[in-house]
Length: 48
Image (cartoon, rainbow, N blue to C red; front, side):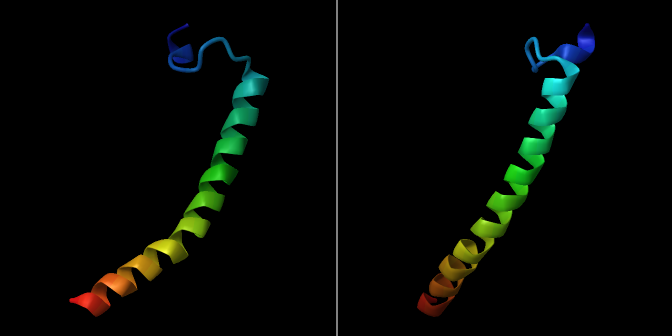
């Protein structure tokens, strides 16, 4: 039962679903965040 740490009482099916969702969520956020970060970076460089 040591491998269930941090996941509560999820079944294997639920875990797989969760991991899939997390991966696609991470992908989406990183791709959406990148342009914002670059814009902020460019603005900061102009000021310097």
